[in-house]
Length: 270
Image (cartoon, rainbow, N blue to C red; front, side, top):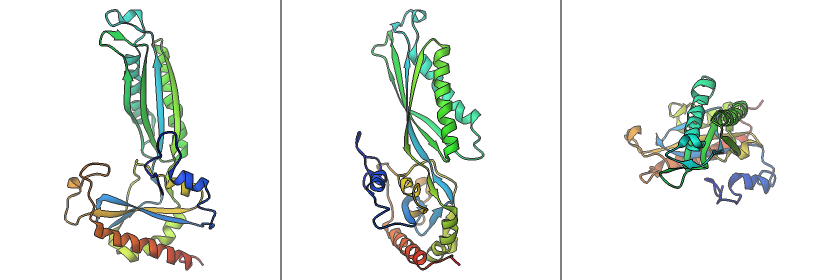
């Protein structure tokens, strides 16, 4: 789908737009299969997971409003930078102390913080922007609530005000368990049983999830790391040294083709 990594600011794109414009309706689509190349999985291997495979990705903005004053007399104002630092610690505690990570992984990361204009002035406000990753909707709702509560109460305790804006982004990429079980034998036949590997959930996100919100789907990873290379030496995605051995793409074509044909032939049905 176009704009898989996100449309330009203020625009709509990718799978969300395609669903909106009827890609699953004309023609009517029963199921959907997809793969994603992996630079850290060896060529010839396929990895998968039933249920939540890739996380939901939401964006949050927290604006902390204090009281500007001179840096030499901080007691005459309310320092939004100090409050923001305390909020960041509080957000980290949501994951490490308030989230049952034995059930599913979750992540809160602050990627941007900005505030202030001079070294000797405590500013009026400070802003933080970050990402939230969750693997089921219940945990997503709970973490959103905890972020709001943590930020507003920490700010309140210091005499500041925190405004929390959480923007829903990409939902969980969910492999329908029944479909996954039904079609697993196809993938194993094509790749070889020993080359099809069950993996843990990944906290990255993928807008293929908009399709599987509407219909059952199976999404898996295709190995692109050259044989003999150590995983630690393989460059991650979205880095200058990213590299894949494109000979692995043949397996991807065979897997998707056979999944389509076998499903249409009624594999796994009575």
